[in-house]
Amino acid sequence: MKKRISAIVLAATMLLVACGGGGNNTANTANNGGNNAKAPAEESTLEGSITSAGSSALLPLVEDAAKSFQDENQKVSISVSGGGSGAGLKQVSEGAIDIGNSDVYAEEKLDEAQAKDLVDHKVCVITMAPVVNKVVAEKVTDLTQDQMIGIFTGKITNWKEVGGPDEKIIPISRPSTSGTRALFEEYALKGEKQIDGSLETDDSGTLLQTVADTPGAIGYLALSYLQEENPDVKTVKMDGVEPTLENTYNGKYPVWGYEHMYTKGEPNEVAKAFLDYIMGDKYGQAVEKMGYGVTSKMQVER
Image (cartoon, rainbow, N blue to C red; front, side, top):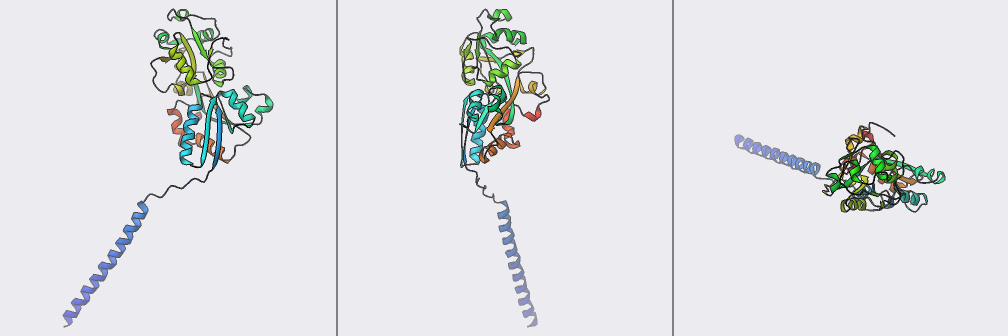
C-alpha cells in the first residue's frame, strides 16, 4: 500500500514539473517572439512644405534628396525647380522661396544688402567638365587651358586649329545668370568672359542634348549630368587631366566649386530638417553615386 501511494505521489510530482517547465517554455517562446518581431516604424511628426529653386547643376541631387526625405516624412511636401543660380538667389532673397540653390557664393550674384541676409549651407562639391560632340571627340581628347580660353572667347573658331576636324566650333554656353557659367569662366577660362553670340540654354540637360545634336559643338556641365553613358558626347581633358571626382579631390583638376543651398535667415524647422538630411551621413552615400563630391574628402580648399 505504501509503495502504491509513493508511486502516485511521484507521478503527480513529475506531472507538475512537466507542466511547470512547459509553462516557462511557452512564456520564453512568446518573449523571444516579441523580441524578434519588427517594431513598427515611428511615424514622423514633421509637417509642412518647402520650395526650392536655382542651380540646374544641383537640381538632380536636390530632386533625389527631396524624394527620399518625403518618403520618410509623409506630411512634408517639397517643390524643386531649376532656373539657374542667379534666379534661385534672387527668389530666396525676396522671400519667394525657402531655399535658393547656387553654384557660386551669393555675393557673386546679389548686391551686398541682399546677400548679407542669406545663410549659406554648403551641401557638396561640384565638378564642371567640358564636353564635345562625338565627331570632334574622334580627334580631340585633350585641350590646354589656353586653347579652352581661345575657343570660348572666339579666338579659335575651327577645330583644325587644335588638331581636330575641319569643322566650325560651336560653343554652347549657359546664360549670364548661371552659376555654372560663372564657375567655368573663373576656373577654366581664368576669369575671361565668354564670347557674346554663342548658343545659350538655361538648363544643363538641354545643353547636353544640344552638344550631342550639333556637329562641332562644345559645352560644359556638371559631372552629375554625365553619369549615364552617352555615345554622342565625350568629356575632354584639360592640360592632360580628366574631369573626375578623384582629380577634383586631389586638386589636379581645377574646375570645381562648392554647391550652396541658401536660406533667408536661419531655416524654419522643416527646411532645417531637409538640409540636415542632405548633409547627413545617411544620404551622403548617395552623393558620390550621383557625380557630386563630398566636401570632407577635399584635399584642397577655396
